[in-house]
Image (cartoon, rainbow, N blue to C red; front, side, top):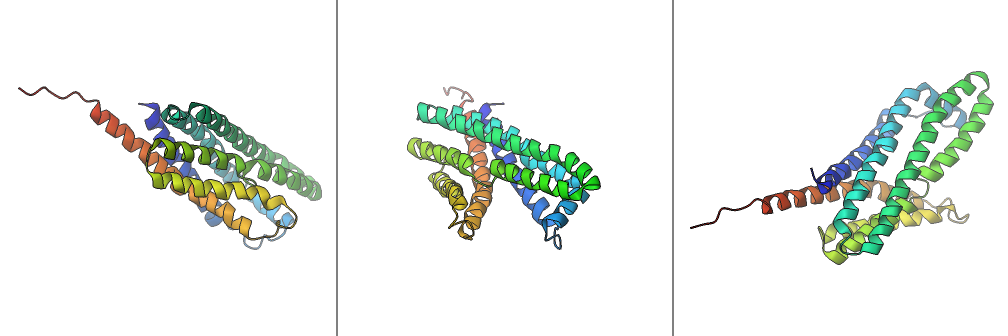
Amino acid sequence: MSIQKWGGIAAITEACTYLFGFVLFFGVLDATGYDTPARYLSFVIENRDTFFVGYLVIGLLFSFALIVLVQAVYQTFKHIAPDLMRFSAVVGYLWVGIVLASSMIFLTSLAALAEYHATDPEQALAINRAITIVVDALGGGIELVGAIWVIAISYVGLKGKVYSALLHYWGYLVGLAGVLTLFSGLSFLATNPFFEITTAIFGLGQIVWFIALGISMLRQTQTQAVESVPTKATA
């Protein structure tokens, strides 16, 4: 199976991990009533195994699928803009490392939090606050790295007329929303709901982008396979 076909499967897998995360964390895990940090920590510990499985999917599975996708996109686009695609591949692998790091920090923290919560809830709460900041910083508080990767791919795709132009314009929109999350840390913008919207656009928009990219890669693979079949010479 070609790297491009693996890339198409990986892209759709990425979208599925996003959908799984939205369903799990906004549907199945109902934190209604756990409206204080202490109560929410208790909620996390009570549902420790569910959170663990969730991060296995949205963190680890997402990351390893992304490695395949980054490689596949690089191989497909590198003839158009070699230097830019080398840059984008580095950014893509950096995104993999960031997501992996944040996920493994969260996964390893669950056991420690449960242990400390049983003996010293206040200490557990302080540890959880520190872990939350680190995980949020690496895993989605600022979406800059993933956004740059999407923008670079969209630019090269439009330049080389690879796949649909609509796909790449959508990539620009999603990438721009991700870049804007960088500025949410400014004091006079910290409480602006605009950045909640940009984060949502990046997350939800990437589901559509991953699905469209995956379908495009799989379709092109099928087209190439058909074109490579030798035809019989006619008399």
